[in-house]
Image 1 (cartoon, helix red, strand yellow):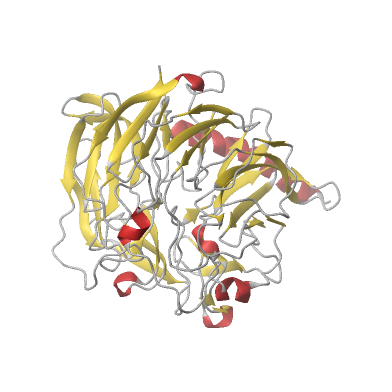
Image 2 (cartoon, rainbow, N blue to C red):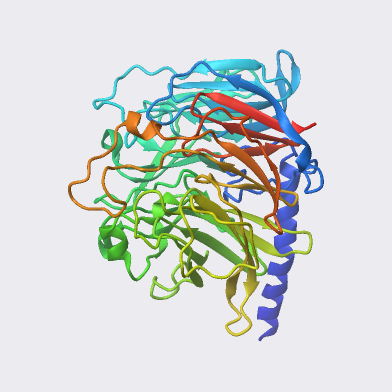
Length: 526
């Protein structure tokens, strides 16, 4: 290795901890500003200090508040986001924010559960098609907080972007048309005064892809779009687009044509430039046609971007139940089909509903510098899944699987070492990790989408909203030891209903969750 190469290597080593310090300094322990905590969608509340493996057995329901809202096509409230030290008319407070499916954004006092303000995101148009769970015509995207400007951004059902004052709900930006009306858009992300979202399903006639709006100048916002495919291939994951620390934005596409020369990236991971949303890299599994033919699209699972040692990595998977570990700078290497590591975890039935990898993963770096990856699974584990060092009983409905990210002794490339698998979870939501504790919600929802078998075929009938709302169970919050998977706490019947495609927030010693009955729940230490 040359002196110059050695110099670059040492610069990289020093850059990683410096960046981590900057992120920790920018946020406090009472901030959870976006879905899965940060633009990389790590799910890691790195600032959290109060909750620990030794005390989470003392969690209890501190308060719950039901918001005036009628659920719309399975969805009631967005995943919570949190901001501390917010100046309100009642003093400085930590506020929790949720958007209601019908189109309101509400701020709640984190201590009392009292509503501080509500803003109606007014809509003056009507959808052309009736609402149903595939195209719900609702407020679907989790908002994002910009602490620097004291603004929370949300997309109304008509596709307009609103920027509201954190403390009083006053309008600070817009509303400005961002995405097509009544499109199915997913959690907002934020980088350098630019808001990002992704779209799937073609609802409202919206092309699937990644969309951005530059809000530097509120008088002249600039909108850009990346259409991943003209033939479907929606970017589904509820976490929305993922922003790496390498000036790239990532998404995973659903079923659709795979023909990169034609601009079609079905059943793929894609990376685009942040500023102009041009595709600069992609990965597709070699069996992409099988994935598309059997509706096993990978986009059900939002990816995560994280650093481990000297490598920047992306991890993701989908309904096929296959987990992929990719190099964030070269997703599929030279042929665009070669991952760093892959492993089959679930869905031996080839089912397109109710089995496989769904939701979003979480990552964590422990106190000795080892990186962990946590993956939520629907249905039973695959017969070919790896042997885990620790298991916690049968898990027919779903589980959480934990891996250490290590360097393979032979290839010297990153690999995943199976550590533990949780006990049974009734369709787990994306987990959140804080200070050695992994929180996960057993959602209790009904995942069946059609009549007939789990394998897709031609004459299946799509279930109605009412059919999907039947045969559900109340959601349960679990706290597990992040190193061993041991259950440290579970909320029992504290939550009264199930939830669909949501997520947790962890901030300042409290855990927030929502359910289908439009309740926001706050769990904290006794």
